[in-house]
Image 1 (tube, rainbow, N blue to C red):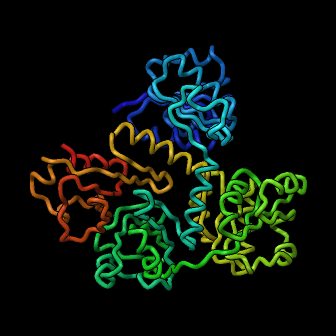
Image 2: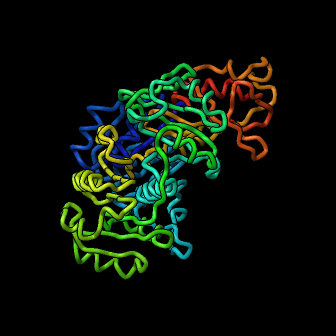
Length: 450
């Protein structure tokens, strides 16, 4: 289905959204006041580019908003996004998606809310990144964590070291050798490309693999891959920015949290607001300071400053002190894949989190099934219900007959989670969790929907 989409703001979030959506049969218009950002879009993406003030009614009136399906207001400034959202809505745009940084708008006592601006959906990038980091901490490892079905199903991302017990073994061999550890390999990321594995796929050193399992089995799956989890008690967060403060506030009741901020006035300002967090003024790149604060005693280190160089260097330093779990935040999405390869720890980007969230909303609404997009992996998860008289049932398929370009990883039947083997029978009203490339989603819908 062709869509008409207007993207306001060509920063990291807007640019990457436009880049992803331009692969579809969509008409894309990008607006930004910055000529360099406009030039970047023109040189990279097949989209119409308008340079100018995103809040100008005169500029926005040049677009036939009655023909626009989605307006995405994605600049870094909340006020610009809110004004642009309301103008676009009043001009006739069907759906408005807005990026906001200030979480006051979602407080129950908020005087104004996104609904007052006719906004259909709001993404809070810092909040999304904070949630992603929390999931990783709670699993007690350096592995990526993605949850489905209210956390009952997890997809865990592992980096395979040379000494992993599954390296140089086939997927089938590992499954047969571990019959009591129910799991499914959903995706492999190798040599800068992702692919859907088969039973004959061989695990290789330096692969990034993504395994699906029931939440209660995740600990055993981690051990199976050579990535056992560990207890997290002491956490150090570097950077008292939005993400650092959100994390400290959320984690301080369950963990011993230390928050380090280089600017002493900023540390003093927020110290009273985080009463159960130890606030320190110091430089995360100062080895003497880190040693004085017993960095080797920390179980988890989160680099969340606004400087990517500081986040990378501080992560490298604390790794040398034996910190078990290192989580590094970046904003420039071009660095994401490179930093993952370095293997310092888990890399999180608020911008990638926001891009995935927005794409999930658009795809799910258009396809009428729940779709989760992982832009950095070029993969989608689709949750689909088996309909009566669908092709799969009518033509008496078996699981082995499902095309190899999609991966069935879980079946939900009456609240029971089944990790499917070759002999499992799919029934009417089963809910299925698949992983596939975006171009192959239609294959799944064709099999299980009438």
